[in-house]
Length: 549
Image 1 (cartoon, rainbow, N blue to C red):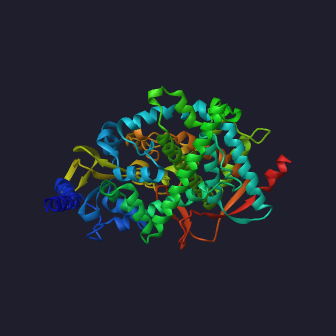
Image 2: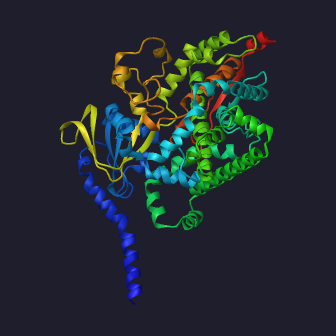
Image 3: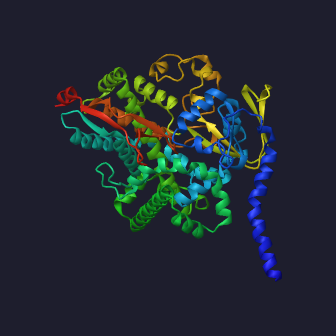
């Protein structure tokens, strides 16, 4: 009887612990009760069903316009969430007090389950610093120059494949399919020393699941904060079994995506280790030429700093996903905007054509300095960052200074904001920073590449955006800044240098919408598919064909 009583007491304690933790956090969040924000729509889920819903991007934009740079959101059971676009506060979060603002535990658990481990973008503290130190050399300028022939050859392969589909006519083609293939193949060849055969559509399923990942993730993101509680209370295998029997198609799709990614990465790594151990010339050459980021970085490190196999598998999935999805989305967005602005498209075509040598190629240093190409890329990444927000949690009480004071719901103005520790979620508003009219002027919400062709206003530098790229927050900043942002820029520029001189792009009659997810992805309005798609009208640039014949 005593055993039964003790068991019941333990079960009740386990069941009540999450409630106790929530009540404790709500009490500590008193300082956030009077921060302005949109009204809750549900006692259970607060504002999250709208925040991560079908109209997520538009709702987030409206929230910024209505409530400003400091916004309070309501999460599950009244939990308070901060939505921040103040640059001074973000400097504290990303640079000065980064250990007090960790990657959110919901993201860590999600990536651990989906990728099979904690990769660079979800690691914290010393684990993150060790992984970052290991990977830094792989993304140097010298490495980018060595990868240039690989980028050019792979992109030309894509152009040839696209030319077969277009012929001499104007054809509607899903350009997102092609940018996804290209981005996957580039990170595979230049980063893993592996080919998926993605350009010809011969990949083994990895490309197909990646194309569905972001939209599927977007539909599950609102539940991310619940995941750490579930994984603490329920054994992993039991949790997996429960997920399989739940009548939830989106969750089943994510399980399928995760299984495919983990199985594929295990096979890639297993085969490369086997061939390297045997002294296979192709694999040894890839290592020697720096084409295999993972093997290069790990073998070059001191033995104590090397990653275990399970960490490497997580890194493979992390880098492949992050590089492929964000770059393909950004490249697709550029082509879409060029289709909507044919005058800019024609000027860019002229710049790229004039820059080509006799072989139709542009060298690395010349390519990265082309002014209009740089302006088009910067303006697109400013207005439409592939990742619209990132998630942090405050683990220790912090007082954040503000560049712009906010007015609370009682009408009092504040120059600083107290953020209680213990796990308060902070959503970093990347779009809000990049489109701030106080920084970029009254036309901040317009796509205008010309702004980068003349000196920027002093307000841009005075804003002191804590980012690593072009006074923007697109690739965030500090120790967690995107390690591969130069890699991504070079990919996009090489792709545009081949695609724009070869084809003209025009809008399809079908309306395009952009959906929230880990990366923002396009879709045809009304589509229920999780696959990203962007139909454009594409025709060959015949004069280029004649000039090169």
